[in-house]
Amino acid sequence: MTASPPHIVCVPDSFKGSASAAEAAAALARGARQVFPAAEVVELPFADGGEGTLEALLAAWGTEPEEVRVVDAIGRLATARFGRSADGRTAVIEAAQANGLPQVSDVELQPLRADTYGVGLIAAGVLDEVDEILLCIGGSASTDGGTGLLRALGARFLDSAGQEVKAGGQGLADIAAIDASGLHPRAGQVRWRIAVDVDNPLTGPRGAAAVFGPQKGATRDDITTLDAGLTQLAQVLSTHLGSGSDADAAEQLCARAGFGAAGGIPVTMTTLLEAETVPGSQLVAEAVGLAEALAPADLVLTGEGSLDSQSLAGKVVDAVLHHTPQGVPVIAVAGTVKLSPAECREAGLAAAFSIAPGAASLEDLLTEAESLIEDTAAHVCALAALGHTSAETSSETRFSN
Image (cartoon, rainbow, N blue to C red; front, side, top):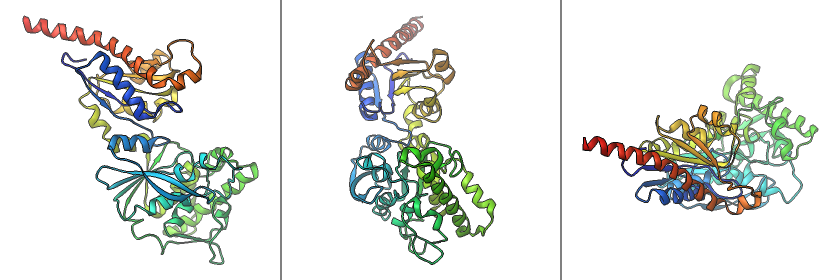
């Protein structure tokens, strides 16, 4: 810590079920100001590309969400939110706003029918107005390889008779050709970046259907159907791209890490629209200017609901550690801390603190999360202040000598 009033950056993820990333950042900042009232305290809500990314980016950009009429994963009318950057040239879309599991939780899940058409409707509404679309794809109810999204943008997926196949995963195995002539003229001109936070391939035992299908209601037979359909989609995509019937090209699409995310959305988007797949935390870091925000920091406060080994594998805390200048302490505040002190030090964390003040129920932690985050941050900064005071005293001594 420096001798002058410190520069503190508060950059947490959401505490799921209790505090959004923006609320958590504000609570950390209030705690810091209790101890360092003269400090420059920066609030930077963060996310890893999954749930809460839209909210975190809007908070960082200082813009408001917009609403659009879409359909959910099974074709019912719905409303979805999306956002734009302050200059209006970048849009952020959380796919789960249109094809998410929560939106269809009121009915029996339909894993073969569910599709991404509603996601495409959001994108279609902004293509003429933006230069870049950040697509966050976690939490989906569908396994359609992104075909619904492309259909909403004007592509057609045809069977051997030249007829459009059924929507959703149920029609994938029947795809024989792709007609991209009707694609929205801007669909291939904007820059697409897809936030991916898993490394699963498109097909096989670790693929989209096998790993994520069950949570979307897929039975064993459904998984077989979906996996075969995604394999066929990869084959047709490789042919459409001019790779002919080269089995190696299709196998490469099936095996590529991350293509199994969100029911296979990346495979169609990358091949037809040249979309980029990016680790979610990296995408958000670039969008909000994380490195620039952390450059002047003397102390960094981060955190999330549960600090565990996954936190250090491409999630928010890992991104914060990666972008913080060497020598600047990073302290985590979390609902629960499942890392040992040695694991924290090895990862680069100066320390980690749970917000639980003692024996407490989960309900108490959820309902009182913001005040507990604030109190814990104040305790953390009180400890930091000891080093700050020591540095200040040392500075004064050197000055007087």
